[in-house]
Amino acid sequence: MIQFSEAQVMIRDMVREFTKNEVAPRDQWMDENGFDHDLHKKLTEAGLMAIHMPEEYGGGGGDAITSEIVINEIARGSASVALFLDAHWLAADMILLHGSEAQKKKYVPQCAEGKVFAFGLTESNAGSDAAAIKSVAEKQPDGGYILNGSKAWITNSGVADYYLIMAKTDPAAGNHGISVFVVPKDAEGLTVGKFEKKMGMRGTATCELSFDNVRLPADSLVGDEGKGFMIAMQALDGARISIGAIASGLMQHAMDKAAAYARERTTFGKPIARHQAVGFKFADMAAKIRATDLMVWDTCELKRQGKRFSVEAAELKLLASRWACEVCDDCIQIFGGNGYSAEFDVERFYRDAKLLEIGEGTSEILRLVISSSVLGR
Image (cartoon, rainbow, N blue to C red; front, top):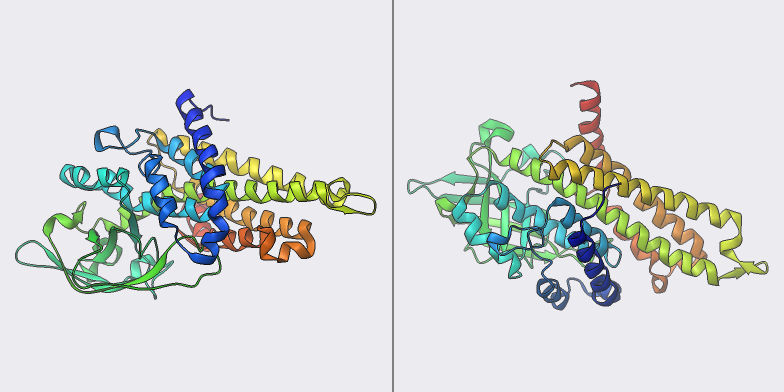
């Protein structure tokens, strides 16, 4: 098991306290009302919006492990808030890792200031088949671009200040013709649709985007033309670690609620925690959480060392997302009829968990990634 540094332990304890006092009490409110702008301000004030960004750009200077500590701890209070941060970093990291020095100096410090970033790849007819996107950025004589198209299911849309949009600069080249652009929220021709009514993760904002002749300057291009698909896939590898960290935190949150209930609820003359049928559920849950944690920190270490981790991240997300659904389902069963009621939280956790099997690479796509590696294809 990885050993956290003294600084990382301090951050973990700080975020744990922050989550207990500021995040967890707002989770049900967000499920009913949507994105919490006041909580976003508190995340910014606590220095969490850019905790892993380099200090030279105004960030906290943490590494890949530090960022997942933050995600994991926050998910113990709200999976929605953890997903908000995950999506924010997914987009901002594309600039940090692939942007020009001028772009880094312009955009990365804004993370620490509380500006929100969003990652825009998915379209209504191009989800798992990401290379099938239809959005097009046509290059102009002055070196700029004109963007047309649309995006769907974009986490943080509607509250984001900047969008990292994938569009085709060479439609005939397939995934080799995709490029990445920074699009500010006030770009003329950008329309943000209504907020989606979702099954879970309701504390995150999700809207459709449409682009009608959006004019982008030349310096809006991130990385080289035609490298957008590769940049996006690398970013998703890192985000899949975050999904594992969210799954672990969400499972722990659900199990803690169920354990407290099981100690108090009495049937047949004793607390249900003392019935073997219930106790064995906690044994299975604890094992799944520990296994998830081991994969999270092991994959984080690969990322920190600069090694390839695409397959490991896929394996982590595949199992962690399934286990999160199973653990939350078991917690509902422990609560019995109360578990079906919104008063007792766990039904909300189950709804949140389901997104983990879909977003940032469905379980089916992850199986393709893993099996291709195992079989050498």
